[in-house]
Length: 597
Image (cartoon, rainbow, N blue to C red):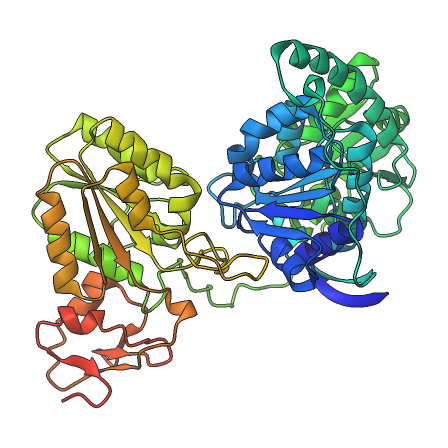
C-alpha cells in the first residue's frame, strides 16, 4: 500500500483504478481535468486511456467497452454532460454489463463555467443513480462503490464531485499497480443491445420499478449517515456536509444527516429522521434538491415537520457554500449567538483582477488584426469557449457573443441571415474545432452562408491545462500519432479560401482578413502560433527614448506586460515574452528587442 497526499481529482482517479477499470475516456474541462491526467501518470499500459474528441464520443466509446463487461470511467464537467446527454439518455434504457461511472464535476460559483448546473437533477431526469462525495477521501472510496452499484443494477452511474472536492487535497492510502477487472467480452444479443421502441418501453417500466429498490438499498448504504439527537435536523450533501460538520463538531443536540446518494433518494433513512423532528434545515448546493425530496416525503406521510431551505429563503439560490456561510445559516437555525468577527474595517480593499489574455498570447494578436482590418466596417464577432473568450475585454472588445462550445460558428450564421450588410466572424480554438466546430462549418457550407471562420490555432487545449487534442500529434497513451490536419478537413468540407497566417505578422494578418472580407461564401483564416505557456519566450521588449508617451500600445492591445511607471509607458520584464506586437503598432518606432536604439 502507498500513502500519498493528492488532489481530489487524483483520489477519484486512483479509486477508479483500484476498482479495476480497463478504459477511461473524457474531455478536458475544469474542474475535472486532472482525473485523466492522474490515470496517465500511473497507467502501465493495461488501461486504454484517451482524451476523446468530445464528451459524447467519450461516453459512446466507454459504452462499447462496458457492453463487453469491462469497467469504464468517463470524465467531464457539468456542461460537458449536456454534450453527452444524447447517448446517456439512451444508455440509461439499454443498460451496461461492466460497471460504468460517469464523473460530471459540478462548478458552483461558477468559478470557470458558463452555467451552475446541478448533476443531481440530471440524474433524476435520466433515472440513473448519482453519488455525491463530500471529501477527497470519501471520493476515493465512494467511486469504488459506484462501480459495484453499476454492475449490481446494470446501469450507468453518475458521480458528482464539486470544485471544492475536486481541488481539495487529502492523504489517500491506495494499492500500487491495481489490475483491471477481468471481463467476459461482448456477447451478441440484439434484443438487449439494439435499442428499439418496444425495448425502450419495456426497459422504462423496468427502470421505474428498479429505482425504488435502489433507494431502499441506498438507505442502508454506509456513507449515508445520521448522527446526533434532538428535534432539529440538518440535511446536507457533498462539500456542504463538510462545512456543516465543521460547524456542528461533536455537539449532540441536533441531528446531522448526510445524503451521499441523492438519487434514487434514500427515503427509508430520511423518513426515520423526519419522524423525530419538528424542524429541518437543508444545506446544499446548487438546487434545492434534497429540500424538494423532503417536502415530498413529508407530504406523502403527512408529517408535521417544518422544512427550511432555499425555497424558504434559508439559503441562497445560486453560488457555492462556504464554512462561513454554514456558520451563518446553521447558527441562525439553531439559535446560536453569532460569534464576534474580527474588525477588518481598516484593511485596504482587495485589488480587482479580472481575467486577461497572457502577455504574448497569440490570440491578442489575432483579435487585433481582425479589429484593425475591420476598422470602419460593420462586423459581428462571435466567440466561443476557451482562453479566447477573454477577447471580450477592453481594449480589444472583440467578442460580441459567446454561448457554448462550437456555437460561435453557428450563431454567426444566424447573425448573417439577419444582416447581410455586416461581415460576420466566428472565432474558435483548435481544440474546440475538433470537439464541436466541424458540424457548424458543414452547416454553413450547406446553407451557403457568408462568414469568416477564424481558427485560433495555438497547438493545445490551453484553458483547461494544455491537454493534447487530435491536431497535436500525440495521445494519452503516450503515442506519437499523425496530426489531424484542420486545413484538409476544411477543404474536405468544401471551403475554397483558406489562409494560414502568423498573427504576430500584423501586416500579413490584416491583409488576410481584408481579402476574406471581400470574398463571398465561407472562408477560413488559420491564425497559427503556439500558446506562450508551451513555448519559450522570444526575449524581452524595451522602450527607447523615442517614446512619446502616446499610450497607443496600452490603449489598443491591453497587454499586461505594458504598464505605467512614473507616468511613463514601461515594460514589465517579468511578464514580457518578446512577442513584438507592441513594436508593430508603436507610431514612434520606440519599441524593440533588448538593446534597441
